Image (tube, rainbow, N blue to C red; front, side, top):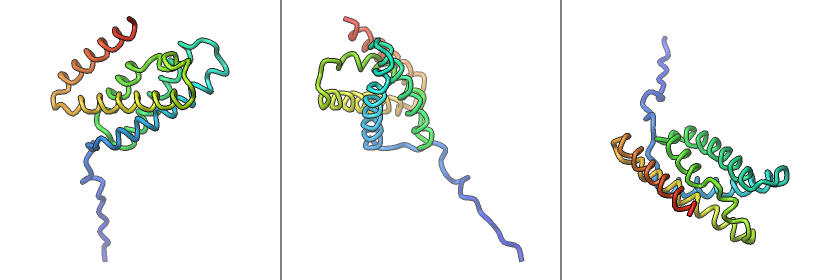
Length: 145
């Protein structure tokens, strides 16, 4: 007698659309990781820009792996857009207390990941990329004023 083995992987969707609560949890987790990494890196370097940039890069890579593992759509675009828009976050919150820094890091990461994941839900990839590019340009310009 032959035993038939069926594999259900073929029926699973390649990309899964998640609700915003997952992006809130992801943003909160990554904001906390950013704070921890920034604190650890600040021991070894004295430049605030280096701390912020290195931490943002590591958090971007971590978020890409998490979103790919969860099969989230447009994980590269969401991660890179959030990382670029939040470059220098450690320097912005330099004079605040620990709880305020934790609050702002988590809040800004949640807002960034929710915003860019919401924009990538547009069916046209070119249009969503252009909108994200414009938002990043506007944010980076406003932050340098």
